[in-house]
Length: 368
View 1 (cartoon, rainbow, N blue to C red):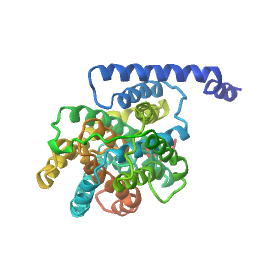
View 2: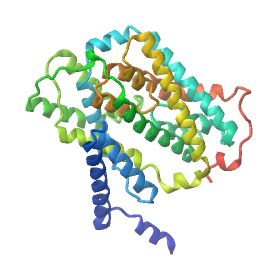
View 3: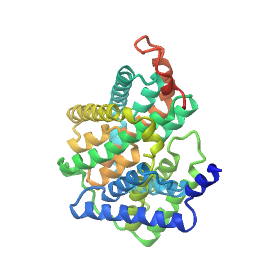
View 4: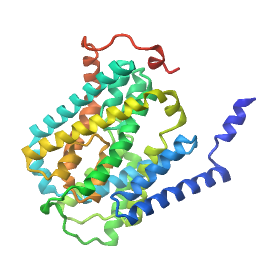
């Protein structure tokens, strides 16, 4: 008799669901407004993230509808492409060895942190590595589930890192100097260009069917928009309300992942997860200094290019803080493809090395 009652209480449709959504959105808007008053970068993103974490951790059953999240990904792709400079991107393609080197260094750091998590906490080897890999958090959780790893611990590690990266890059990037040549000139936009931009963003609903392409919902609209921008046909400009909503939806999607089931089951791991996250962010910051020294990029752009977050959130912060978006996007995209396409294969090979602890507590291996 308890199951129907539980299901009834967890319903999010009707008046009860509408009221919960109204309160959540009001909290997100209030926090975003407060952050905006102090000129905090990516205020809608951080306000929605904070509100989502509070609601998710308190047991709210609210979840961002998948179509809404896909549309936000598509809008983010168009928004990012509209801020890119094709000339800079062409120059970066010529530096592909540096792109691969920075990707390899970041992955090595993530594997090392995963090994340390395994040794210090006893969580399973595959869980530790999948939880430490930077790139697409949602993809890592899905891959871990398919591979039989405890997806709850992977989700905790991934989403704690993602939230931490969003906050840290937004704060630090706001204080780092901006290179003089990264400021983009304002380009005219017409009602037609706005309509086309919205239509391209809506294409994310169909692009997500391309299973072979990671983050297709964002990448396909971004590629299409980049081609239009590079051709000089028109400048795609999304209306400002849509941009704000895009930031908010992505923030809510991440924040609402912090459910009691995720937090409660692995509460003892949170200090170690926070420590490993701080170490990975710190190491990535050192990589950013190295990248600045060898590439000539400004410090803000180099820092964001090596930040271990998801591509859309880091790119959105790069835009709001006037960094070199093309450079940030190039490094983040290479790493994303490397993690999603080759991560599982590399993990399988690395787990055969004798450095790993072969036995871990049963509760970290199973879904119990």
